[in-house]
Length: 389
Image (cartoon, rainbow, N blue to C red; front, side, top):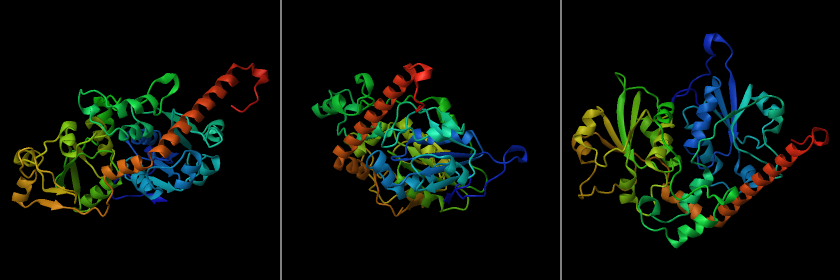
């Protein structure tokens, strides 16, 4: 088990309000390519109780039931651990959620989104806990899924950043990859997520820097928020006893300027929620200027500016975007110890494209079969039902 506590530094489980016994909540899943949809599910689950335990499946279990994961189990454990609503992570959690598992970790109930999760033989993985009344459901975040993100990464085109015509490759994937029932494509190369102020409020801490805290500014795309970002932010967090980390996120067009291709995979609104969900980040600047200016440093009363070991691309006029913090002597380059980048993630997907396409098609076929069986079961007279649903 990996215990987090409620803050980045960790801590013991606290009793519930009024001194009552804490309500312990269980979530589990693959958490492959962790995105803000996963974070939102865990945020909702945490709000249903006082202490959230998250079980993460192994690579072997995922490969058996769904197909190959994009990230290794160790990467996935660490990504879930970095989500600020998670109190404890259980590695190698069983794929099928049972009462035995809930009892082992003293959990009152488990929470899952309102989507279907099936075993390799097409059975509901939450069937046992549902029948026992120890299952709660939360709303799935519309507009994002792992399938959706994989689809976006397979499009090596700038079509979703400009009004140009779709390339033939784009059309081919749009016509064939991951279509859902009725022929509607679940992704188009353009994010279907609609940002609202309420969603930002739900994810934001709402806390301002306090006296004695060290304000640290970091900036970048933070696209497909991944373990490389987490490792970097964790290292930055350790630079001070009481850090207050502000992450500046660049506009989509700016990211596309210095990254090229079809970057960013996630738009600014999506990247904002992904970074806000990280326990090491206190605040996010939405659409930060590329150059870290004197005005920005003064406005946020920045004590330290950090950047990773990745190349610093010059600004549009050829200048160093970090020249002002360097001039002030408050610039630090941090070696996260991780070599994972957004480019490498995309390369993993492209290299294993056929496997990932087959995985997603297999998943959709299972879900369709399950829904059809459920429909037939519901249409049967009560006396003729076989009790499998």
